[in-house]
Length: 108
Image (tube, rainbow, N blue to C red):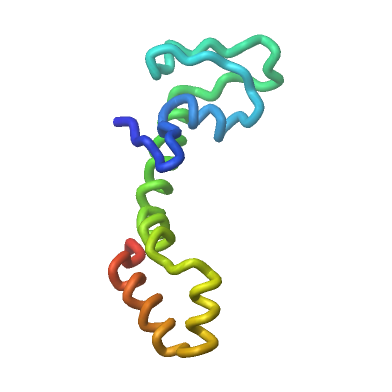
């Protein structure tokens, strides 16, 4: 399964390689381990298939667990509006923020 993040990047072998070996150069065909062409100018070796699979799973889990943060962020009022609410009616501000947090709870 490939997850497409909000920024359009896919959580796949390419993203795992970027995470495991930042700055390395490679080409991936068919999103498969066998399709990795690790370029000779790299200072490090290509990660193992196991390392890559573990990294893909880790990135997918991190992305999924942060879904509530992305959902909350889109619903919070702009910071200027929040500051105005705090100044004029802090209880209304707390109610607004708490209702958004209740709508998108942290995963356990």
